[in-house]
Image (cartoon, rainbow, N blue to C red; front, top):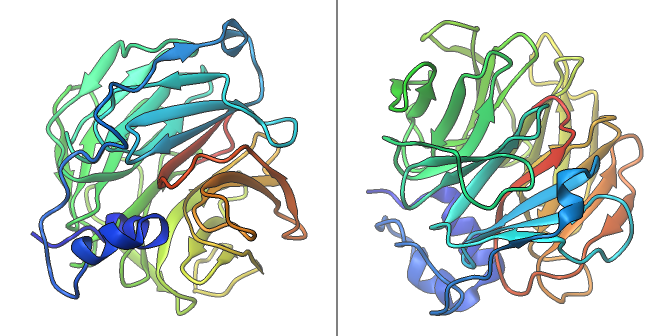
Length: 312
């Protein structure tokens, strides 16, 4: 099995020693549920989470947790933590506040009510999951970071499989307000599945770099982050031309827009000045760094989500 590009990038960014074992210039098996230590991660949720209206979620791949923060403030500390998740990757949040957590190791998507630490539903049947997104009608999609498979859960707890136009591994997935599904690939191709369709259309190939996180805002612009520290916006008709792009310092894999779509959040694994992974907020209009959370140590954030969500 080919090593997931997303996992490999996470290893390289956050764990130089592990990176040598993960990559080594050859294909390798996906790592099995890494842990920061042998102890069970603490699970807690402050009461304010249930009523909060500006939450930030970030998954820690090695720590096996989802950290919960307030978006407002500076150098914010977590106000909640969901623990004991096996290699959590992509995250998604619905307008109702339900949190969807993709497990890279287990191939499942666990669904949590806002402010809760135990899932009320678990979708099974996936493998090597990376990104996850929820369409307006409740259909759930998750990408396989080691192949070109996308898993679709509509009315069943087990998925059907969609195949994009490209043959290389998927990166992340996003849906727009009409339920159209978008996916980016390891070799920078962007595809779209029209709502209700199992056939993908190739949109464009970007030459900025290797993409990972992908969003679709309310204007149907595709927003993606690329290796080398670039956030780019691609408007319809999706010909590969950007309407905006800005640089950032570091390495981010997952991104999310806030409700206003004026602020973009990401988990930066190599922030300027060091100190370990942090959540960072950037202005979509200027690219300015607006905020950084407290550090998460040497860990990899493969999932970021906000509540209320931007259109993702």
